[in-house]
Image 1 (tube, rainbow, N blue to C red):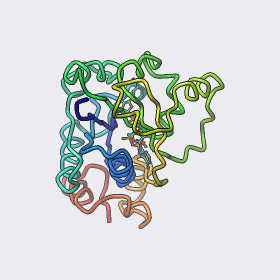
Image 2: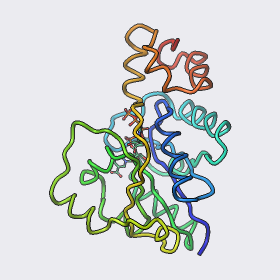
Image 3: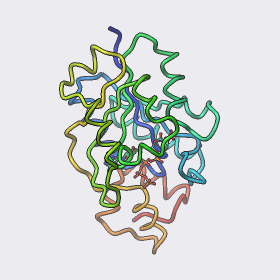
Image 4: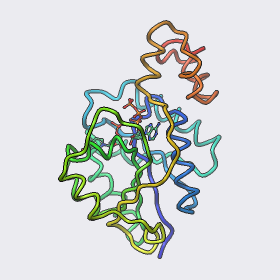
Amino acid sequence: MSTSIAVLGGTFNPPHLGHIQGALQVIEHLGIPQLGLMPCKLPPHKTTAGVSEHHRVAMVSLLCDSNPGLYPELIELDLPAPSYSVKTLRALRRQHPGSPLLFVMGEDSLNTLESWYQWRTLLSLCHVIVMRRQDLNVSRSAELNLWIEEHRCHDPAMLSTTRWGQLYIAQTELHQASSTAIRNEAAKSGAMMPEVAQWLPDEIISYINQHKLYANVK
Ligand SMILES: Nc1ncnc2c1ncn2[C@@H]1O[C@H](COP(=O)(O)OP(=O)(O)OP(=O)(O)O)[C@@H](O)[C@H]1O
Ligand SMILES: O=C(O)c1ccc[n+]([C@@H]2O[C@H](COP(=O)([O-])O)[C@@H](O)[C@H]2O)c1
C-alpha cells in the first residue's frame, strides 16, 4: 500500500497551537510521515474566510516552516468556492489513487457533520480522523451517533491497510485554543489576555502585528 496522505482542513484565521498540537499528535499516534494543513478558499458555513487567502496561507506556511512534519496543502485554493470537503477529497483521491487518504477534523466539526454537503460520501473517499475538542454547544443526533458507531474503527493499523471507510477518534489532548476567541480578544483592546495570546506561536504573533490583521497582539 502507498504512503498515507493526511490533511487537516480549516479556515486558519488565524492558525493556532490547537491546530498544531492536534496535527502533531495525529502524526505521532498514527505513525504517518507528514500532515498537510489545508486552508479552505471559502468555508461552506461562513460568509467570509475573514482575512485574505494570501495572509492565511502565509501564516500556515510559517507554521509549517517551524514544524517538520507539517506542510501547506493548497489544493482547495484552486477549486471552486465554497470549499466542500467531499469535492476536495475527490480531487485528492484522483491525485493519490493508491494511498490511504486521511481527513482530519476537530470533534466540533464531527458534531456538525450532518450539515455538510454529501457528508455520508466522505467515507467512500477517505478515512475521517477526529481530534478531541471540547464542544459545549452541540449534542449529536441519534442518527449521527449511529453512523459514527457503524464506521468507528479502534485499530489504527486499519488506517494504513485500507484506503477509505474508517472513522477513528484519536486520543489527542484537549487544547482550548480557538480562532474566534483569538479574534475577539484582539478586537477588544489590542492587548490579549495572556492565556489567549499563548495559543499563538511567536511567528504568528509577529505576522499578525506586522500586517495589522486583527489588532495588535501583545
Ligand atoms: N483547539 C482545537 N482542538 C482540536 N481541534 C481543533 C482546535 N481548533 C480547531 N480545531 C479543528 O481544526 C479544524 C480547522 O479549524 P478552524 O480553522 O476553523 O479553527 P477554529 O479555531 O475552529 O476557528 P473558528 O473559531 O474561527 O471556527 C476544524 O476541524 C476544527 O474543529
Ligand atoms: O463540506 C462541507 O459542507 C463543509 C462544511 C463545513 C466545513 N467544512 C470544512 O471543514 C474544515 C473546517 O471548517 P471551519 O469552518 O471549521 O474552518 C474546512 O476544511 C471546511 O472546508 C466542510
